Image (cartoon, rainbow, N blue to C red; front, top):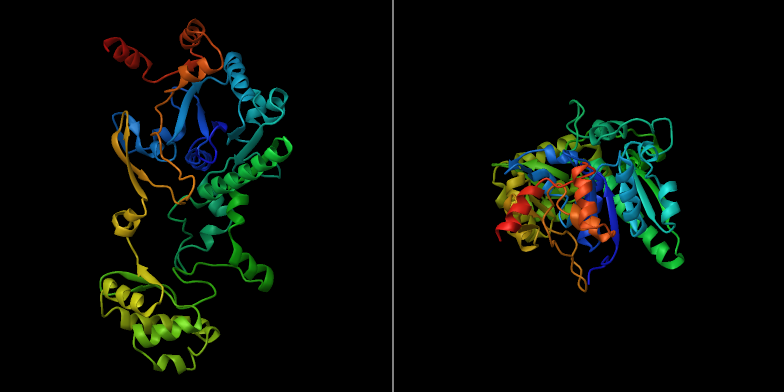
Amino acid sequence: MLPLSGVKILDLTQFLAGPYCTMVLSDLGAEVTKIERFPGGDDSRRLGPFINGEGYCFAMPNRNKKSLALDLKSSRGVEIFHKLAEKADIIIENFRPGVTKKLGIDYETIKTVNPEIIYCSISGYGQTGPYSHKGGFDIIAQGVTGFMRMTGEPGGRPAKFGIAINDIAAGATAIYGILGAYIHKLKSGEGQYLDTSLVDAGLAWTIWESAAYFGGGEIAGPTGTRHRRSTPYQAYRTKDGYVTVGAGNQRLWERFCLEVVERPRWIEHEKYIDLQSRMKNIEELERDIEEVLIQETTAYWVDKLDKAGVPGGPVYTYDQALSDPHILARGMVQEMEHPKLGKIKTLGIPIKFSKTPLQIKNPAPWLGQNTTEKLKEIGLTDEEIETLYNDQVVFDKYREKSAVAREEK
């Protein structure tokens, strides 16, 4: 049995922050039902690459989920959602603040039909504050949190993180918030409302930067690959690429000098004698180190670092990362069969449980794939369901094709 087996989640989110959250919860065993508008569905469905009309980007964070395509702007659609909410444990949404209230699916309304519900809202800026009404995508949050001013090379233009860092931060924050609320519910029987945002969650990750600012008035700026408080701790150029070195403490620094670059004189050099001196002279230190490292390949230096017990590694391109034997041995690349995309690869589960190992059980659903199934679960008859399809209250992208296939069998 998986940790969250039996937990029912209604997922009203799209793009990445919310879907990442519900993906992890579904990996943990929760039954996640995506409630999607139609005919477009989750906006990430329109992101390529496409295979047989289905988007690969949607498939990545929506595995292990079911899809119910429902018109929440219709009274019957809202009625169906309320019936689903009666039996749900958790609801997660990422509409702009105020939208759920207009639709009649907000926490206060749902609480009347299910007092124990855990209801989590993820938005750009949160449900309160002067910016709460504004929309907020990851790039907006990266700008507002100062991330773009501390990323990239000194003197360069503001740069965004290579991944949607604020989206993932908000999704991860929602995960631990929901799990905490669920534990409280198990103890007390009480549900509650949770509110997080891309800005709040991202800002909460600026641990060293906040210490520098609150403690010394320092405003974090871009440092390339350098650490703000330690050196050598960055990527250095080699003969054929780059290598990372993490030799920030004195013991590792001395090993690096003696056994890796074989420059014992650096240990007693007045400019490099301790961490404070090395930080003060970091520009010169970088030049001196690269003058040595550029003479040999990345693989050569990784081997020397490993033998010396100094943390270090190659700076991969993404394709190299996904084909690395260690990544593969850890199960971080998985294959599965998708009904429309065919055989696909997906990222594996990053945490390994000894007693209840998590599972990637099913591929992401097509739009409305489980609509009929979910309607039957709340007691609707075949005739009632057919009427809802005919009146365009619900939707299944491949319903006609699926019906034909069943008849042919």
